Image 1 (cartoon, rainbow, N blue to C red):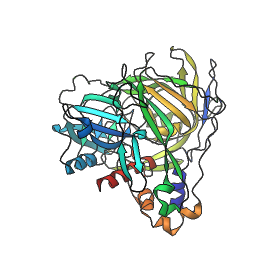
Image 2: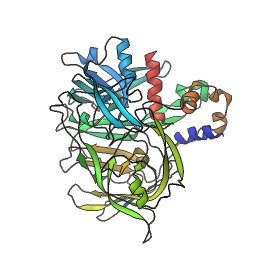
Image 3: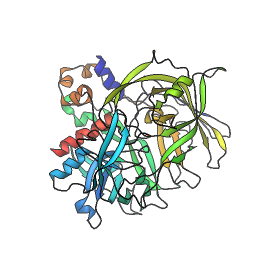
Image 4: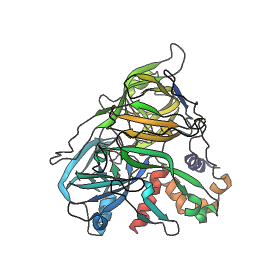
Length: 473
């Protein structure tokens, strides 16, 4: 198998990691073993995002697009691509302040427009039905409180960051933290993420490439639930750990009641007592009391230069490097390392520490994010989680609930002979997944505290790009 094919195969394997079985007795730690080679990147959470104006019938006028749910984004965004698509059908999102949206991003500034206030709707992939023969889509957004099954979030009066081809061409559509102000949820919405909630069979989608071989690929799915919802323990604790609760602190502006001529914004979640260590022995380099952003929009995890120096990491000898780019589209190279331990406290919601979530052999990359921010907890750290529940309005304080597999079942790797075959290398799928030098709209977020990371091989976001292009045709 050649190098490019191997990279593709790696992204089709959910990190085959073992997680230590965990109870919830006081003082007990929850160890999670990561594999640096497989866990450098994690999956983003795809959503269906809609927008409509006051007085419009959402069933007739909803402007729908694929996007990502991003706990690290303090605003809601609409990509320049999606805005241009709406313009093709004479229904663009109306603009309140042309050129009024600005943010400092990785590699340069991003600029765009501020939308007129409208209702934003967001729902998970379960709301999509895909015709595998035509790749056409139908949507079922449940916007009524008390309706059957998972519900969407609906937030009125949102002024979005609308991307423009000149100032923010690479900015994706994002359901940021204002989406938690959902009017159809009691005291606001929490988001529950099922890490293996949506399955794509690439063998069915691309039979000419895979020759009838079933190739399952799992994407995260989400649903918006009432604040205060708790994760239910697994029926088999030998396979799934008991839920743990990581306390978070919300930082940032909340102007949803009066955004004026600016963007509607809401705070972002941080864990302010993170410890990192390069070993378990006494005297190993370590830093503690660090402030890290919990960012579902980041496929990778980051540490600042100061943290890297505190851990004794040598910038001349990284374990790996990766090319990333920001919403401005400008690329840069970052150094990657393996940190022996990233430790987060967990509790019962009573403010009393119960133990620590210990993420071991965690791959991270070095990039200075912003003043007062020591790093980002990206989705790669949670590749072996089964469920995640982020609740900014938790009555006991903002929190992240987590459950992990005690033994990951893994997925079969695509046969090397298929990946190296002429039919695969000559297919459109190969061009999209391997040859594209950059894939717009993977992880950009329009503010320095949440960055704008774009990894070259993010299959979940690539699927969204394929669907967008297909739909546009």
